Length: 67
Image 1 (cartoon, one colour):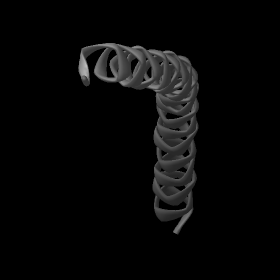
Image 2 (cartoon, rainbow, N blue to C red):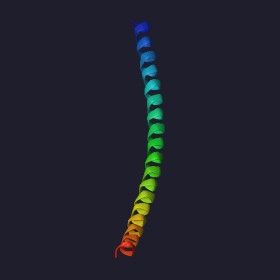
Image 3 (cartoon, rainbow, N blue to C red):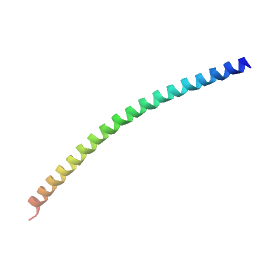
Image 4 (cartoon, rainbow, N blue to C red):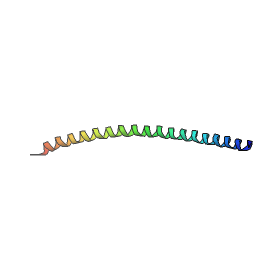
C-alpha cells in the first residue's frame, strides 16, 4: 500500500511539473503573439496612412490631367 501511495505522489508531482512547464510555454507564446500583434497594428496604421496619401495624390494628379 505504501508503494502505491508513493507512486501516486510521484505521478502527481510529475503531472504538476509538466503542467508548470506547459504554463511557461503558453505564457511565452502569448507574449510573442502580443508582440507580433503590436507590430501588425503599427504596420496596418502605416499602410492606411500611405493609402490615404496615395489616394490624395492620385486625386490631385487626376484633376491636373483632366482637361
